[in-house]
Image 1 (cartoon, rainbow, N blue to C red):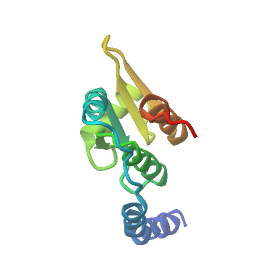
Image 2: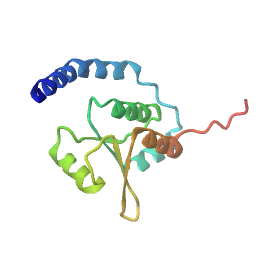
Image 3: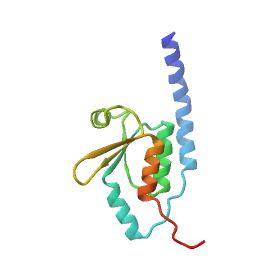
Length: 135
């Protein structure tokens, strides 16, 4: 019975994965516009970030869309297909759960942020553009 259930869900993943990836491509928002100096500063800050993810995980897709909307260049690390990234996630973050944002602080400490809502909130707080124009 367990084999039947496992086979069913693997089949569902095979069918739904391309649909999810196509939907992500079609619905990814435009990046916010920044001046070249602002974008260079954001790109420099993003060098300290890495997103551990699975390609077809809906929560990872949600984070990747926020990354695209904010115009960020964050390294994506596939913890499903790359054993080295999977091991790094398990050793550094303490568990294999995605999405997980690794934040390397200047003093050398690493922070591992789980949960798509928490990651998106952190990214928005750190990189979101505040509208200073009067309404």
